[in-house]
Length: 428
Image 1 (tube, rainbow, N blue to C red):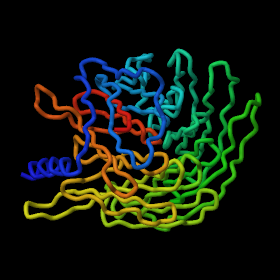
Image 2 (tube, one colour):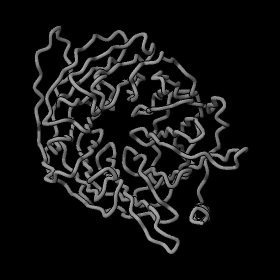
Image 3 (tube, helix red, strand yellow):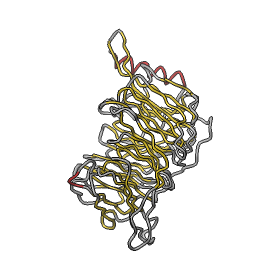
């Protein structure tokens, strides 16, 4: 009964605001690309212009365990249950290369330009990362042994470096060569103030923000970047500031705006992320700009690339005559904590944060298992994306996971029918 009410409500909402649906992609049995096969169009859509999501391609991904899209939307890769990695052409969805199985690897991170980092998360028996070359895959890459299990990985939006935090409290800065002919730069290592549970880095790799699992701190650093020296000396990264969490039961996840100005931490208790709190700092000085607590769980937060806006979603239990149901709420704040809009959501619209445009004027959320929405900075709906109905099952496939480019311009959707779909925003 509840599902029926939700479906009817979603249909009424769609009709009421006059959404334009994106074109439906072909069935996932084959790779289908859009007519545009050039490089991704990263031209921003002007504020106030109605937009829609346009399908680029849909590709089958049998036995997928991990997938990723580069921060600039320029590359897509995925891994199967055997540890084999494939890089897809971002314009057509066709496989550019595929590696043999990489035993023990179960995570990946995609760099702008197409290089792929693969690793095994929280695995002391497999403490290494592999860099797969953008053109040759495993045939021309590198492997880096680490001094402990991999806890966190971040790649700069500029694509120059990957940052890896280990269980020994060490942060590795691993260079990514801009071209195959570029000189090789040696990685650097430096010691954080605890085990890096999460880390984030600015686009130019000049600032890194780290949250620690054991010491319950959030700190910002000026990393020592890789050097061309034949035998690099031990590096000493400079800590700019450190904030104490103050509550042993709280653990932080951190993000950082691409321009390196705004650090966002979201803390919570327990596995469900109860009693979430968002804190926002000036990344250069450590000044606490604002904080907000929520009565709920499962909170997510993202800063815009320019650091001017922060989007937040969280979940809460709501009681109805038919019983209790989980609902999500969406909030958008300016950098100084001003509320653009708050607590948008309810029974018929239950938003979970997916992406945020570079200037913060478009928020992408998932509502339910089959629908995505885009809202502007005033909370007005600007676009809707529903996956097409399967002609045999007479139902739309579920949306299992969504991966967004940093500017929110591209969406990579892992579907419940065993396929990946890439969408991009265009002016309607």
